[in-house]
Image 1 (spheres, helix red, strand yellow):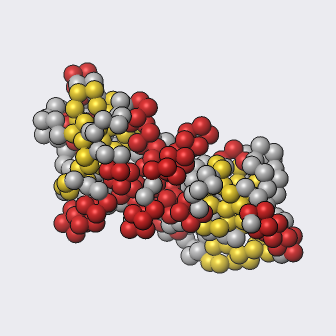
Image 2 (cartoon, helix red, strand yellow; image 1 turned 90 degrees about the vertical axis):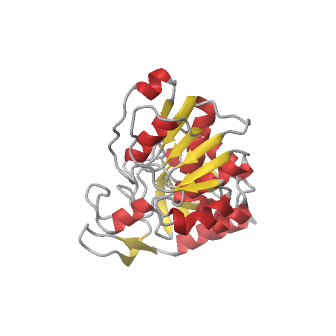
Length: 315
C-alpha cells in the first residue's frame, strides 16, 4: 500500500506542473493561495541535498501566527508558512530517506526562511528529515507536531541530564494549557509522575488539565520573593520563560532540574546563582530548531511508545 501510494504521488507530481501553496509575499501583504511551478519549487539554501516531499499534513503553531501576521524578525519574505510537516518522499535525494518513506520535519527554518508545509509539495533539506515509526500514522504525527516534539524533548532532557527516572516525582509544567504544556502534562502523567499544571487561565482550564492527568492546577507563577523559596516540586518543564522560569528555579528541589523551552512570558530571566550553588538545580535549555538526528529519532520513538492516541484528540 505504501509503495503504491508513493508511486501514485510520483506519477501525479510528474503529470502536474503546478501545485498550490499559501504564500505570504511580504510582511504587509495578506497570505494568498497561489499556483506555483513544481519544477522550480525553491530549494532551501543548504546545498543540493534536498528532498521533494508530497505534504500530507501541516499544523498551525504560535510561530506560524507570527509569520502570517508579519511580525518583525521572524521570517524572510516571500515565504510559504508552515513550520512543520508530515509527508512522503517522492524523489530520491542525497542523504535523504528513500522515496516512498514517510517522514516528518519539525526543525530547521521551515516556514520562516525556507518554504514550509502550507503547500501540496515542499523541498526540505535531507538532513532535517526524520523517518516516522511504522506504528505512528501521519495524522497522529502531525497532531503531535512541533508542540509534542518539544514536550518530549523536555522530558528526555530531564531524564538524560536532570536525573528524572521511573521513580514517581513531582513535576511542574508552566504554560500548561498551551500546545507544549498540555502534551507535557499528558506524557509526564502517563509515566506515573505527579504533575502540577500552571496556567494563566487556571479557572477555565482546570477541568481540561485534570483530564489530561494533572494532579493540581495553579495560576500563573509570579517572580520569586526571594532567591530560594520553599521547595514545591522535584523537576519542571517551563514553556514561558521570564518570571515563571525564575519561580521554577527558586522552588525546585535539591539536585532537581528545569527544562526551559519557551519565552511566551518573556525572554528575560532575573534570577541568582543560589539555586545552582546551594541546591544543585540544573537549568536545561531545549532547542527544537536544530536538534541532532539522534535526538530527533529518540523523540519520535518515545512519542510512538508513550503517546495516548485517545488523549491526543483531547489536546
